[in-house]
Length: 221
Image (cartoon, rainbow, N blue to C red; front, top):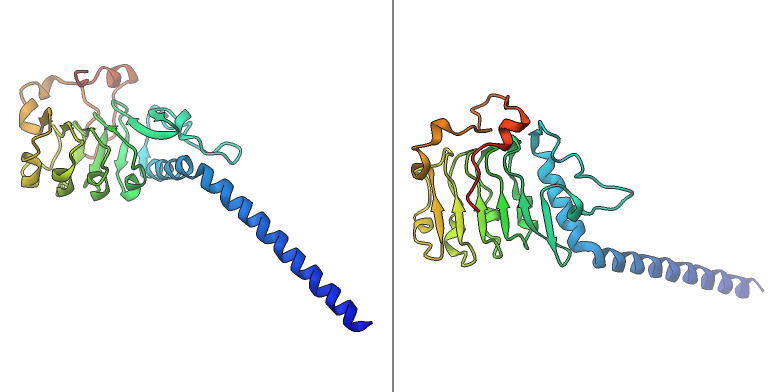
């Protein structure tokens, strides 16, 4: 009798374990179905954490809602086939730096951060984005070495680096990229730099009004 009871208890434990394994498997499958947007959304949220000043609250809707992360509904983010392909945050006077989380945004075709106050070095991970076609970092405070991997990026057609601090430190490979239709560094736009309203600062907060900031230098499109 005791042996039969012990067998039943063992069988019950095995059923509980199997049920838990089934629930865990279904949870993992559900996570795998939504992982592209979730991983890209998490990467963008890490980028947001590096923004120390957002004077116009442009990133205010970058957040998790009811446990869901949907970067395609966020300001400045555009998606195609449920993948983040464009990040356009130009003329917003954002202050901060960039980090390795950009490597998680492997479907990005355009990164436009023109006319802000981002500083520090450009992450190597951006140079490894094989789908990237346009990179506009003009009118910021970037410095330090420029990622040499851009020289191997055959998709890149437009690279705008004007009015930053790393002129003279660009890797020789950058100048050898023959696929570029437009390549500009500081010396290309020095003539009008003094008359262009800019969010770029040198350690001072952006004091431009929102109308002034949006009338800052715009890339010809």
